[in-house]
View 1 (cartoon, rainbow, N blue to C red):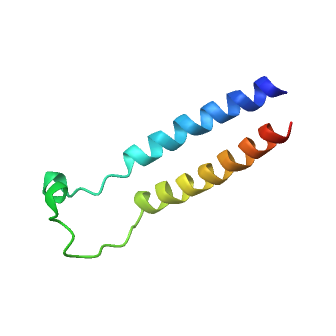
View 2 (cartoon, rainbow, N blue to C red):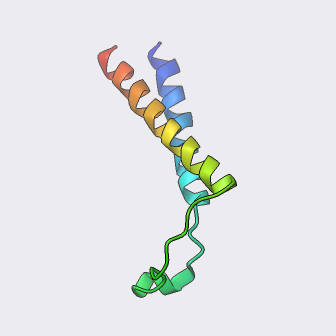
View 3 (cartoon, rainbow, N blue to C red):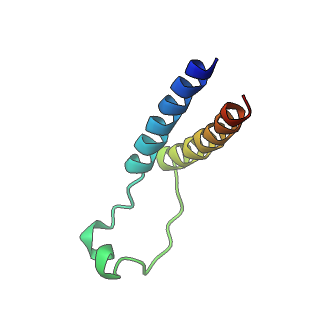
Length: 71
């Protein structure tokens, strides 16, 4: 059981990293020095789905980690 939970944890963590890396703001290097924050833009389409999947995977990761801690 422990091996299964560890495998699920690894898969979830790699997926979370992938989802976070895919979520680019598109601001380029200008935001690195304080620029690019002059406007607010809502997430639409695939960006919204990616954000929702990231949140779901983070919650699943948390729950699996808690179960792994208890067992």
